[in-house]
Structures are given as structure tokens and as C-alpha cells.
Image (cartoon, rainbow over all chains, first blue to last red; front, side, top):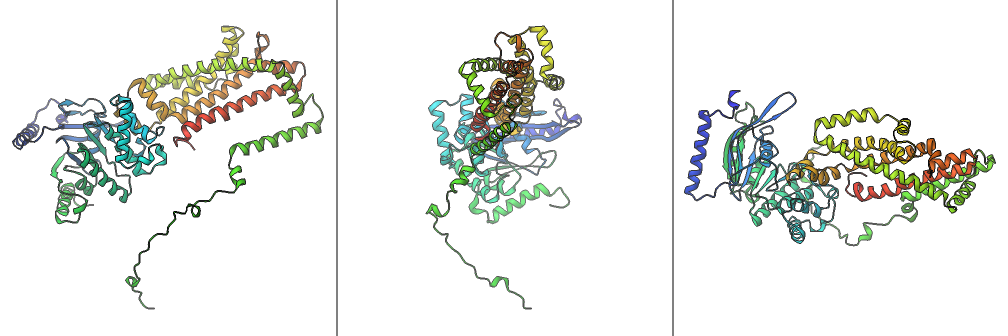
Length: 288
Length: 290
């Protein structure tokens, strides 16, 4: 595995750089904003007791401000590992991750994370306490201002009546709303969402997707959203990064700005869905 | 047999009934059922039954030297309470207990912090716990007497020994079982070091920590009474254990029972009042424990 060496600069790598350069040049022509988050040749590896497993292989992407950027791929493509690396929980074995030009070295409240599990809420704090917690713990917002922000965000996710309830009294969808409110109240540079709706039932999931989009319409935050559902990727995302399975490599980057719950039944939606399906599964003999 | 046309069934829609009249949906339970749902009431009934059984058997036996009745025991207790003797003895015991318990908790905190922050710390705690946890505190008493002589320091030493390992072991187990997602949620907002332990690990591991505190308390209390029985005799101001020992020497069985009752009552109070209150306000309210 001489290719894993970080010093190695093989032609493929230079090509990737050239593409990135060309892309940013093209972006310059259209007066595109500079990327908020950028990944360059990110290889992620993690250790099991007996092996070093490569999760992603030289992944490049740029997330622009107010993007709803989707990481899409089958399980085992390292999309969650990528999100964790952006969160600062996992250091890349090779490559660079930068946010606003600064390299990512450790977790921080500028990248608030919403996890898939419901247990991400602190059980010893009420809904209000949970939303207040990061603001107070970081000292970013204090006293009355923190309280007002928390109440405002809780109202925006429709939980004003439950502000004093403890997490164990809430349903899965409500816990997810609290987690989103908690993250949003911090005004992070980017919101990291790790399959946030995967553990919800189909009806709740759809409502949460609509609510998330509604929230985005109001606040225009940037988010990096991991999912394994093609439909969810097209509905929620403005741009979709399709990753190939194990180890994850960039398969395609597609636009999905035009699609929402209102036009799920249109031909273009189906075409994009088929295209992604082909990108994900054509390598295999039999589609599953 | 004719084929049934499944699509021939009519479709229909209904609007839901109006349930704004709450009475129809929710009705209070009958009074006796609500009363029987109170844990306090059920336990009081049990205690009263036990007390009656004791009184009846003691009167049947009619041998106050072996088994004084409940009334005789209570009389002896009231007598000692009125003279202030029992209160002084109890306070002496509680004073030593609080000293030992607090010192034990402080040392346990140090060990657990070491254990969560490094692998060698974990090994240290695991080894020491394996060695000392099974060792009865009373077995250390002769050593304590050699090192610290008669008196409070020896008692505190054995109490620390009985509290420390139970609390440290439980707390450490609690810390290790905190879910990864919660840990990441904490680190995500930039918590680290002492703030991470205080704001995240301790509340998240609170059910286990509380279990450790309860076990530690029970160990400390019984160790203290036993130690006082062994050498309270020459301490200037004896505790409850000494009170029991002294009464036995004078064959005042009712006083022995009175002393034992105080030991039990204090144990019950701490368990069912103090720890219950802490549980109700923390782990029960947070839904971590039913």
C-alpha cells in the first residue's frame, strides 16, 4: 500500500488537484462564493483491534454557504466517517479538511452535529435545558440572550409546549426536533446531520424533512447531510455527492435544487433517482 | 362456491366523535386503590404488622432478659433519649461516619479520575479493587489500631476502606457505560477535562454512581457499628456500638434492643428518605431509572 503514503504525489492526485483548480476557476467566472467547507484528497482510516480499515479514499468536495450538501452512498462507503472527520472526531490519514480556510483539528461548536440516535439529548436536562446547554457550556450566548434564543428555536421546531419536558417523555420525532433546535440555536457555521431521520417512521420522517426545509427557508443555514436514501437525498439536498462503496470514493456530484415534496411524481425526479441508482449499483452484477 | 369480488366492498369515510368532554376519557381510580398505590402506605402497614408480631411473641415468651417486648424496648429508648445519652452516642457515631464517608468519596473521586484519564489508571483501580474490595474492613482494624491508636482516626480509616472501593468501582463502571453518542455530543460543544467530567460524565453515569453511594453508605454504617463494638470501650465518648456493648455487659437487653433499633432507624431513614429524595429528583425524573 505505497499509495497511502501522504508524501506520494502520483498523477491521479495531481489530476484531482487540477480538477479542483478548474472548478474553482469556473466558480470564479460565475461569481460563486468561496467554499465554506472543503475536502481535498481525504483518506480516512480507522483501527479495529486487528486491522486498519480504509473508510474513504481521496475524497474531494466543496460545500458552499447555504448549501444543503448531501453525502449519499450505500452502507460502508464511509459517509458517516466523513461526517465525523468534518466534526473533528476523526483525523484524516491523508488529505486536508478546512472550514472557512482553517484546518479542522478537533470537535468544536462551529460544527454542531445532529446524530442519528435519540440518546444524543442529555437525559438530565429538560428540552429547554438541552437547547441552552451548548450555548452556556461554550459561553457563546449567556443569560437572557441565551434563554431568548433557546425559546425562539424551540418555538420554531414546534415544541414550545414541551419546553419543560424531559427527553424520555418525548417521541422520537420530537427528540430529533430538540436536537436540531439545540444545534441551530448555536448558529454553527455548518450543521452536520448523520442520518438524522433514519430511525423515524416513514410518516414522521417525511414531516421532519419538510420541517427541516421550512427551517432552511427561514434561516438559510449550511448543512452537510448524510443519508442512504436516494429519495431523501434528492428531496433534502441542493447538491448530492454520490460515493462508491468500500472504500468510499467520489462517484458523482449532482444538483438536486429543483426537487421538493411537491414534484416527487414528476419524470425528472424519477430520472435523477434512476441515475443515482445506476451510479450506485451498476458496478455490481445484480442490483439489490 | 362463488368467487368473491374483493373490490365490491364499498369505501367509506367517517369523522371522529367529539371527545372534548374529558370525563368520558379519563376517570379517577377508587380511593382505596389510589391509597394502596402509595409505597409509603404499603410499607407502613408491613412495619406495623412486624411490630405487632414482635410484641405478641415477646409477651408470650415473657422473658425480658432474652427478648424484651417492643413496649419495654421503646421505654428504655425513651429513657435514654430523655437523659440525652442516646442522642450524644448517636451524634458521636454520625460524626465519625460523615468524616469517613466524605474522605472515602474524595479518594474515590481521585482514583476514578485517574482511571478515566489513562489506561494505567484503569489498571491501578482494577487491581486495587480486586485486592481490597473483598477484604472485610473489620480485618483492618488491628492494623488501624497499631497505626493510629484508639479513637476517631482508626474508625475513619476502616470506614474509608469500606466506602472507597465500592464507590470507585461503581463510578468507574458508570463512566464506561456512558453511550458514545452522548460523549460525542459533549465533545461537540467543546467540553474537555474537568468540565467534561462534571457536566457530562457524572450526570450521564449518575444511576451507577448513586448505586455506589448507597452501597458505600451501607458498608460504612455497618463497619462503624462493628468497629465501635470492638474497641469503643476505651474511647472517651462512645458511639452507638459502644452503647449496645455496654448494655449487654450489664444485661440490659431492652437497651441493647433500643440501640439496635436506632441503628436500624438511621439506616432506614438515610436509605428511604435521603437517597429516595435524591433518586426522585435525579435519575427517576430523567427517566434513567424507574
